[in-house]
Length: 415
Image 1: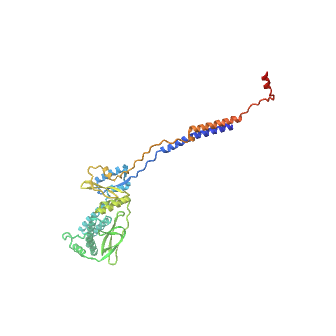
Image 2: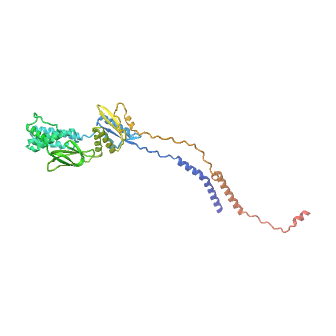
Image 3: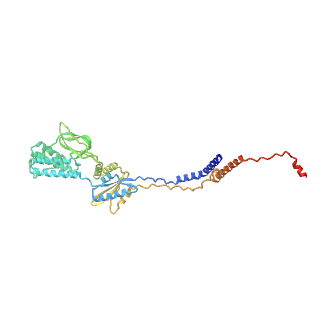
């Protein structure tokens, strides 16, 4: 039994040796032939910006966003950012301007009816609406008209000091404003002219808050800070792309500076994107436009953009990149397909050197002891040697009788 077990072990060892090398070759071949994962290509986000808030340019912008969604190398920005750059602008300022205009009409009507208290209430409410409006031209002129209506109301209420302060504010907001004697009462014209000709001493206004400071319609710097101002009533606004516009009326006296503490108003991210978009569309010159574009791109995290606008019924477009030359030439859309607008922004394909071609050499012959025929022969030799040794060890020669007569061979041959 022991000899049979040893024989089986030897045969198994010989088979393992014979099959080890082909198996190793197959495993190596499988490792080399296995597919490698494809290389992931990062898509560059591109901002699409509608500057004119026009339906026609907005439709082109939406088509560009659809193309970017399925583009192989470019991508749209974040969904909320992309919508805020294209959707119709919220009419917040327009609604407040309309409310102030209604209050002005109501105040004038009450003045004509000599309802001075109601006229004053309308004027103050109209001014409060404008404190949350960006202090641009329309808002400033409307605030001046409301201050004029308030001055007439106070004069009708026999509050001459408050009337003089309101007329002085009208003059600061609109220095060219004059009153026609044919349309205003003599006492109103007289008081207004007195306010215009007054030259008050100077004081200061301490503005506390964050943003750009506007005093009586003029942008003076950044808050917090102190700013020179004449004695009397003033209106202060704080604006900025990342804050809600807010304002406050202050009074500067010889004994005390005006205190304009204006708290920050929270904005959502889409509201902030809209503010950057408005700042870009209202940039007064090329330098300001470049600064506004860089600020918007940094906020929405893009390096390329397509800008759309409608001028005289024609859609115009240009591209922007965060490297030279920056803005491209402005062009009419014409018959260009929206996809053509994206071509200047597609990154150039990298130049790939051709892979060197190698001549496949035949593999070297295996070493003699790795050849299968040699391994099989060695295994067979071991088996034969073992079997022969086994039988040799078991062999016994049979016993023979001993013949002590050595003469019998010769005697038999002589006969």
